[in-house]
Amino acid sequence: MKLKTPYYLIDEKKLLKNLKIIKKIKDVSGAKAVLALKCFSTWSVFELMKQYLDGTTSSSLYEAHLGYEKFGKEVHAYSVAYSKQEIEQVREFADKIIFNSISQLKMFAGLTSKVSVGIRVNPQISYSNFDLADPAREFSRLGVIKKKALQEISHLLKGLMFHFNCENDNFPNFCLNLDYISSKYGKLLTAVEWVSLGGGFYFTKAGYPVEKFAEKLKEFSQRFRVQVYLEPGESAITRAGQLVTTVLDIVRNKRDIAIVDASIEAHMLDLLVYRISAKIEPQIKKTYKYVIAGRSCLAGDIFGCYGFPQKLKIGSIIKFADAAGYTMVKKNWFNGLQMPSIAVKRLNGTIDLVQKSEYKDFVNSLS
Ligand SMILES: *Cc1c(COP(=O)(O)O)cnc(C)c1O
Image (cartoon, rainbow, N blue to C red; front, top):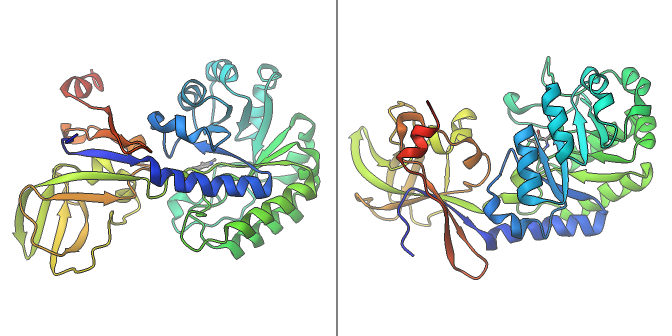
């Protein structure tokens, strides 16, 4: 099938590679893994993912609903803040509700007696290369800091959640931080049934000591007799997707600039937020340099600067790599640009076009 660009292409074979790493971690450590939907919610590949993952975790009522409806298995529900109406609905979907504060936990204690309740802790340590994504940044609202206050409500808790990493590929750093948490919160950890260590582990990066990581989790789990959970987002889908685009025009302003039929602002927004370039598959010979730019009218709508083995032409195909996480969940209708379709390359090689947007979707996104 010849697909019309722009489109996101998810490759199940590449996805499977990550899922098998997660399975190995689970098998060795006894930990469970739930997909963080805020990173990736493209439910057309959930059939495959749910064979390897234990369920989903969410950041809102709608994500919890999606996890329940499209993924099944365990549904963990977290939100920075719930309204009462949301709690009344989310408790119908969720096995576990993780509150962000003691006030929310107390406020809704009467409504959550049938679910396993946990709370998010801010251990005041973290690993993140970006202040924007650092859960323990100054004045952070994410999780409870006061240990004494946590101990006072420990009888209301079945679990604890520590999400303190962002793309952490540094295993020794993780060990130090986990040891710190173990010694600081030992009493609380012994009192609960489950502990989620959140997401942000970059165990799908080449060379990551997967086995040692799993052993470390196992040790922690046995020491405190808790079920450990991981909440992989990015590491579940690393390198499993591409954004495929076509060059529409080439202009020159000191540099050659190729303009593609997509936009970093609208279709890979996370990169713009963190000011990093999109990746393209490594080229061996890089003779011809181009800036690859998006077609929104934002001056800084630039994917990056790359070398290519031959000159680009109108109609050349440009594929941005690693375009599965924090892309489709953040796409927007800025400039009314054509929305990329979503296609899935199945394990058997067939390609399914699973979503195609039209003018009416743009209209319906507004009123
Ligand atoms: C964002 C988030 C995740 C997933 O993080 P990744 O870096 O994509 O692995 C997991 N848990 C919580 C609570 C989060 O906020």
